[in-house]
Image (tube, rainbow over the protein chains, first blue to last red):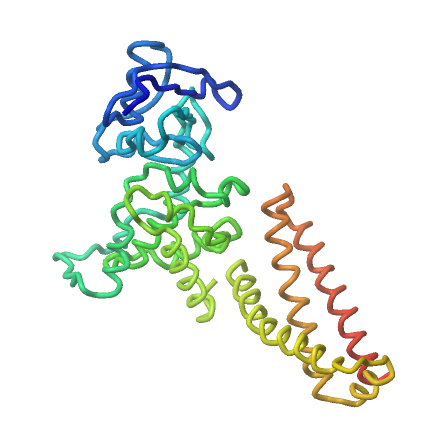
Length: 240
Length: 109
């Protein structure tokens, strides 16, 4: 740590706006979220951003840091920039910006509903506990994607969402895939239909940006590939 | 419908991967010592294997290319609806007509 100051450019505004520069002390171990908080408390109280847990549990502090979507609470400044380089903070891409670094996530979560990304117990839920052996391939496939906390990093990283705003996106499709593999779920007939359209799983280009940037090390790309196979199997059997 | 298009595009890609390799390999092999139009026609006239191979090639292209173009246009332009599907169905028909006409001409003319 040789340089004692840190230059930060932060997006101010909504879809239109400009970057505003700040200079603050550079500290050992400081996270990007520490930087934003210090700016809001010490330099400009009107700066808007979102956070809750500060420890990588909630996912609400996600932003674009020097061009890459990240959880700012789990990103140390020194891991992003070298001494003398600028920190550049923007709101998540592919979301409507509420103000500064805070984004509107309604569309993102609406797409989870559209992909039927919720557990469907069926008309007659089981009376007893379901026995789900952890070693079965279905459960292992579900477990691989189950830890998603809906932070929106994958959605921000996805080029297909940038091209097609109707595209369901990696998070919603990943959630649908975990449910396709949930042996207790009774909604797969309609779920597979819900994810199979021109803005559904078939639209994925397998760029793997979601997989690259997911802070939970989930691979939505593989989940989407699984959905493509599930849809194909159903189509070949004569279902829509 | 999307699932069927997706399957059709993948299946025809499988055919094309084979067909393009054979096509290019045949060209490289056939023209080693130079080749005239008359020599080509001499080999293809009445050659049923040639007609079947290129007939399949043309059908695969006529299915594969419009689906890919549809995806590109959906992503890069605002066109989404039935007009896009209709335009690409016509494009498919054009490829099929031109391709099969060429196969027929080289096979039997």
